[in-house]
Image (cartoon, rainbow, N blue to C red; front, top):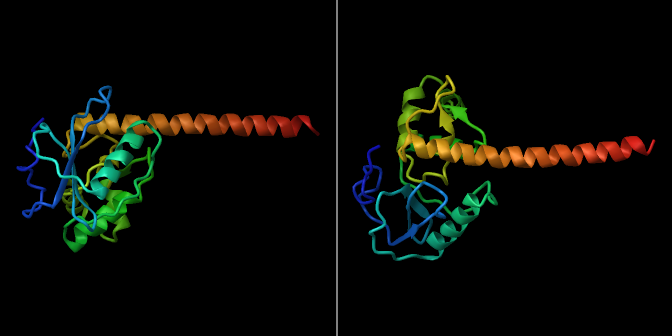
Length: 194
């Protein structure tokens, strides 16, 4: 797995943002540090890093992002609510918006995303835009898989992608089991009352 230093990553815009913070997931989570960058307008960059040797200069947006990441990893948050300010082409922006529509704990194929952005023949271009996503996790590019159901490339590495998908699926299965139990209990009480 190739690791870029946060400043060498080719997806990072040439102009570095005003604010930066490193988020360290709990020790039980094998993902490593996450670099968060923002302007006063919104989040511009979130990526896994091999190093946390960066001078931090947080703002309210990076701090809120770190809090939401913490809740996500505890299994308490399924959708991020943050101001976003990524830089990309019009097509990349459309793809990134389509990624945000993928529900927590679910996946879509590159073809599904191409259809969603009204470019059904642009599957490779969708893959390229997905790979240039500057807001990993927040814009959930890890939820995109191959049409055959297999995991495909991920800027953070396929092992991280696998971990993230398993983390989300476990939460969805737990919630689903609770809902099934509640439905059964309600149905049983209603059925027994007649």
